[in-house]
Length: 297
Image (cartoon, rainbow, N blue to C red):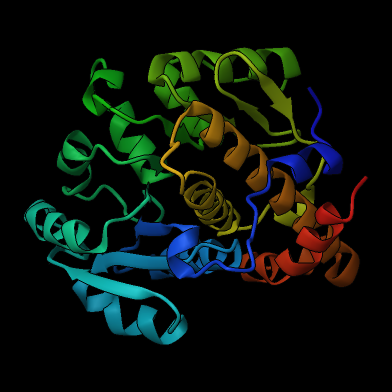
């Protein structure tokens, strides 16, 4: 099914006049490393721009000041690191923060590198999770990796073609039917939602398949995937605030996020040209994108 503005409008979380920040979910982003702290900030910025009530960033302690200065609206949780990457001993530290912050959704992966932290954290985390970038790469190295997750809640996996190829151990072509088939296969293996990025991004829960018509070469820049992951996590936190963090809410959040992200890319391209758009500028156009979707009939 091809996504449209009218359909995406029906998926968007409501914004009651009587709401407060607790009404719109809490997102915990676990991202960043010594060399890639920008990925973490991009994720958190788009999660906040999506309308999430609270966003916290867990990152290597040496990068806390840099990240906090870049985005003062978020909370930060500095964690132990090893060689610029999150250390395995960061897991119990983050566990304590999770108990206090009580996140609705966890986003894991962007800019983490091959951090020793990733695998033990994924094994013990039972919160609704968006898995992106290095979280997917680390998983792909594990035999029978779907069993590592052992989840109570569905996950949203957001691979680009290279990451999908590593997860499924199969070449991913540009053929649209093949791409849809691989996305469905990944969803059935995880029991969650897959977002296979690229031209006409595929979003599926293994049964329903959405094809995204928005977006183009303006989004072919470093950091674009980080912005998308944060946007999806922020929307899911809002859609699941009634406690319904199920596959349906995950599918709707992913569809909304992908469509809006692509629409922002299209708007940015008109303003800045395909060449000159930066990932951070994509999130700047979310207000316009939301207005366009909300005005659809």
